Length: 404
Image 1: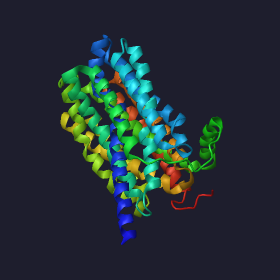
Image 2: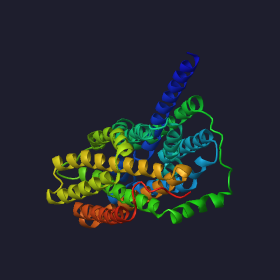
Image 3: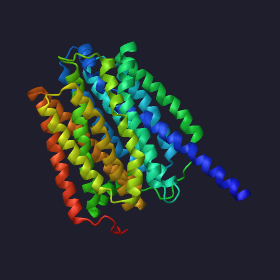
Image 4: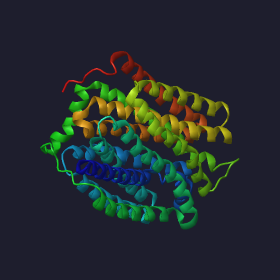
């Protein structure tokens, strides 16, 4: 009886920790996406062309990729709770600077810092995988990723609605307050995790990421495929604000933000994709995502970005992108159990470099060719992803044992 009560108590404690991780993941990742529906009002505030503010989204994703490279590898070697608390404090400071930015250049610098310090979700996801009971890793990762995906989607809606009431600067101040509140929840609700692996020199730690990719080329292929899929996703969302702010739509900021709600269905697929990844070869899901994205961007060109086509693309693009990410990460965690934080770092660095490339290419495409340029940029990235995934599919057996 006592053992049963202890097991029940342990299960309840893990459930509470899992929900805290899910909420923190969703709230922190939102920092990266608050700026997307605000690009038009930022341009008006700084008296610059709309396309100039596309750099805000690009540098935020570059900052996130940098944070993944420089901070997330520590998750294998230091107390994760302490690392998360430091990052939440720095993120709050960066958000405050963004809200006070006097010029676009300052906002770009602050946006890079926001991305740099908002990598907490990528520390929490492998931590949740480590804490998960045997046989439930896919479900647990899927739940935490549902929080991340809801944060990505609702960030745009919350940002647009808040900006309509308190201005775009107020959005960043409110987000900074969220970071401070989360610090208290993390301090009280998540366990201490003393490192079990000796701490290497920082240079050796970063070098180990390159070594991991060199010794395990399949990890690089998984990461590049995921990065190109996310790049196409970012190309769509970064320039959607520009499209909806022009005739025949001329939508205000709060209406543009509401388009994020249309993609909430994509978050529902995360636990399903996690369970499928536990049972089947997840590479087939990635094929479906690549093919679906190609059809969507081709359709947007042919339909001249009609409103119903845009809404359909929002729903399906989020669903396809999220399914591919869950499948890629579940496969990666199964292949590299001894280095989950470092493998996740490699994956997410490439993932957000792909996102930054998608945002940058799409902004250039929009400036010179309108939405045709956006779609061509996305289709180019998808083609790179398809070729990479084909190489993976032909060369790598899905369940081959990885040498340690």
